[in-house]
Image (cartoon, rainbow, N blue to C red):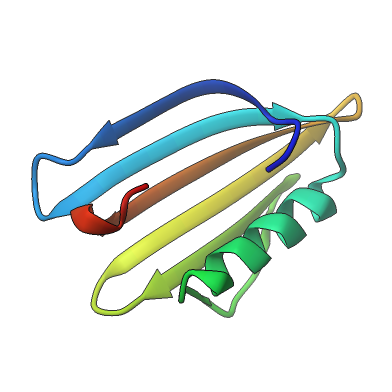
Length: 96
C-alpha cells in the first residue's frame, strides 16, 4: 500500500509453498487498507472467503486461490495509524 512503513517482513521459499509475512503501518483508516488489499488480492486471482470480517477491534480478511494458497490481511487502528499484518502461504514461484 502506498505510504506504508514496513515494520517487519519475512519470506521462506524453501518449500514448494512459500510462507510470507509483512507488518506495516500507514496513516489511513482501516477501511482504506482493507479496500486496497481486497482489490490487490482479487487482481492476483484470490477470492475473498465469506464470513465475519471483525474480531474485536481487528478487521480480518481471508483469501484463497487455487488449491491451497491462502492470504490473511488483519488491520487495527490506533491514534489515526493503521497497523496491518499480511500472512500468506502461496506457491513459491508466485512470490514477487
